[in-house]
Length: 254
Image (cartoon, rainbow, N blue to C red; front, side, top):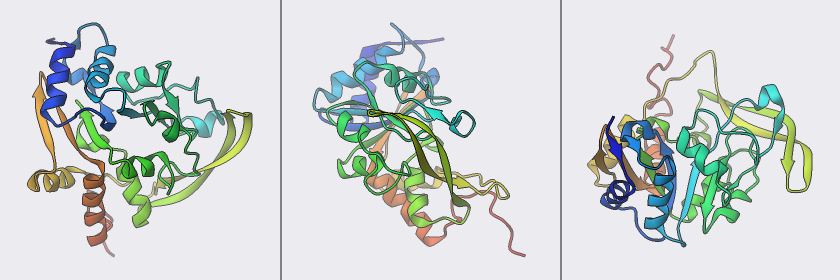
């Protein structure tokens, strides 16, 4: 496997427009970018060196085992299925994490405290960390991951009230700054009778066609970026025209 070092990562980030002071929401699949010289931390060091002390780094730290465990500790519960880089950020001593037991984010940098303190019933509510990232004009950054991984999709789905999802409550013990509390959270879950399969490729093509998407190749994969507000506006456009437009297995009309 080819190696990748901090300088290469920095140059790739610079090529797609990541710069000093940026806030970035990162989805990662770093296995496609090569074997990191020095370990996973080289991605963190490259990002911090380019966004600087005024920048903020956020990663999804999702874990969907809460319905079974009925217990969530933001300091101890690992992210699951989010990749090695997300778990590295979650465990970083300077990172802070939101309290949503299934769709938390881990935050590092200038706005870490602000974002991690956003305690909303759903992870994508008004006033949530995701909502605040839009206000702060964050960028979306894909480190080897493709557009299918972008969690911001759910922000638009919730607001469009898409018919292939519904609200569900989840209750259990949450370790808050004040101690363990019994809390109820919400999630806009899939209708399993439909089991919707979504594609975000039309969204990427739309952004590319309007010069709102930047990408560069690194070893076996790509780094991509765009403004979060542009991504949300594009998804909103598709869902407004047809709430089923991004579902590849939409039910047939009887």
